[in-house]
Image (cartoon, rainbow, N blue to C red; front, side):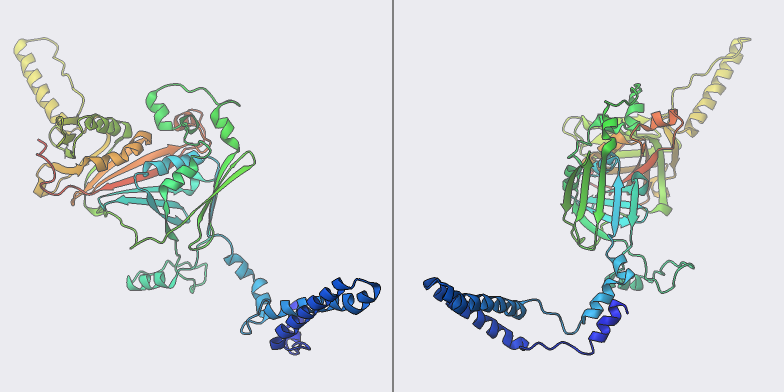
Amino acid sequence: MSLHQVWEAASASPYSPLIAKDSQFFVGFSLLLAAFLLTGLFGLNRSFTSIALFGVPASLAFGFGAVYMICAVGVYLSPQIPMYHILERTSNPKAMTDSEPIFTAVSSNAHHLYTLLQCIGFAPKATVQLTPDGIRFSVEEARTVQGLAFLDKALFTSYIFNAPRPPATATDDHDEDHESPPTNTDTDTTTPTTYYPCFEISLSALLETLKILGINDSSASGGGSSSSRAGSVQPGPSAFTTPALLLDRSCTLRYDTEGSPLSITLTETGVKTTCELTTYEPEGGEIEIPLQRDAICMKIIMRSAWLHDAITELAATDPVALKVSASATREPFFALSGAGGSFSESTVEFSVENQTTGGGGGDGGASNNGAEGENEGASRAKRARLAPTVTETFLVSPPSSMGSRIRQDYKFASIQKAARAMAVANKVSIRGDRQGVLSLQFMIEFDVNGGSAAKLSARGGLAPVVSFVDFRFVPLLDGEGDGELL
């Protein structure tokens, strides 16, 4: 007979104590009081006779009185929940599954996490959403600039996500929006819609936590973009280099249940440092600046270093607004201008390289002049069709209201918030829609083994892990920008 069956059989004949539950307190208090009096009498007359008369009864009275007092003021079991029901819940494997943490991830190189989160570190708080494919961090400021960083699960050596059951409010929202839940023929059709937890944390506290082990050291990162940009040859790793010393380090992220803190455990050669960050419920939902993907009028892909150098040059004049100008038919094809500064205005133009035309064979002066004129005209037409040399993709299709050139103004201080992402990224995709919303999507490559992406590809190893950081900016209204870019 199992323990559960024994417990059910015992429930038919419940145990009734000799002294009722309501009287146990009075009996216990009386026995303790009698033990106190008998102990006092034994202390006044200590002899062998007193032991039998006062000592033994005092001990018995104290023992039974303590037991009855514990039973009287001890733990009560709710009569609505029998003990065998508690036993059944404990032995239920489904209940054990619910006790598993919602999210657990282990990273052997936390510098990658620090680099991505530092790109959007311009705001004190971040909205975090846990998904089966990775972690999404979102920050915003004054509803005019938004930064999005996605930590792909490929950055972690271990990534476990147990989707919790959606709350009642989330289910109601899906019903109101008339969104059909995803179907899966391999599972039960009654399975609830997948719910991804979302909460807010202190981003500044998270960055400080990741800096405990000094993972922000540039020598440990081995960033592929910076090393390839500088063009210097880095020495190979050895037992005394910083990447080799970081092999025994790990960072574990854990989120147990809804409302629990986000636990971060940093391990270094057996020494563990645990930090728990308080999570907050998002206030009013996540703020997202919409980008109309079906109304993109400008898409430019180029090396992020060129954009970073241009913004750095313009920042020297302390401008107020950044003017973006792009055209597919006439120069300057792509230009950035800083206006409204206290010093002066400056412009950085991205144009095609100067092309030289060669003369003919020299049979006659008139024919040579005519050939040179035809070549020069063809060169101008070709240059009008070419894109700036520094760009890999250059697609500009302005709406009819703008003519042949796109012109938009943005707050320069907001653009500068993406400077850190410009410095560490390999490429940047510059997109703009018809409403003027600007999107800067940066592609950052990481080597999962800690080396640079350039050295990894040279060795013929595995492909680097690609991560993306996206910034979105709201344009300035008419009258907020100074002047117009010619």
